[in-house]
Image (spheres, rainbow, N blue to C red):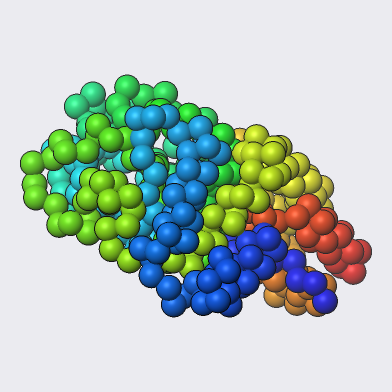
Length: 355
Ligand SMILES: *Cc1c(COP(=O)(O)O)cnc(C)c1O
């Protein structure tokens, strides 16, 4: 039976990505060798890295002022690399969820951190608004999509300091004005590739401003100057990322993908709001298009595990909510077909009939 994959991360990838990557693991670019056993300095892999970087630029309309690099260590390493490279004295952070608070914790190793607002008071179920940022903050760090709590910034805040964003779970899900950011980073395992790599977009002239020495592997400039090949990159995830990027381009680009994402999320939220068993957990105006969090209403709470089993018998996997929210989380990343969302909706409707 075909599985409907709603895992939050690592998560669904396009068939195109999986098939082409599997083929290259067996025979890479006609070399007769596996992608895993050839030099990353060979012309075949250099071409992969160059094309992947170029496609990120093309799909997100990255201006000339910015560079694209692929780095190991996931998004969590960026929690530390960002302040290591950009924070001299003070930076502002928005505490909108678990990942944001982890980024805050790391930044504190490097300087003063001004947490301008937090939604922790209501278990991160909304995006804080109406805050002020000190004009002397060197950057303002946001998390555009809060994977665990299912909230998303639908508008990039209008602030006077440069922005830095963790876009791990909504990069390539909608167009973004990259010129407003000093750094955008994303772990690959939600909308791009298997885990093991992060894509980082960095403004060249934001670098070189901090006074501290930066170890080479943690220095953006070193990776930029070496074309993202300072050391051996994670070749299989980068190859897979290239396949996903090609597939995005084939679909018509990020605006087309955004339209599909809106459609998928809308039909699922409509069903959550209609169905008498379920209720959404995120503030309606901040609902994420990527991670849809919902629970059973108080009077039906005891049925949560029964619904999980009911859904899994229909090939629906990965909808169990994160332990800090409970209930259910359906992740609708770019590679998720609308038919899988419809299968989940169908299961919600038919389960309601049984109660
Ligand atoms: C998954 C996730 C992370 C953590 O990514 P790693 O690659 O595991 O370090 C960080 N931020 C957000 C928003 C995420 O969704």
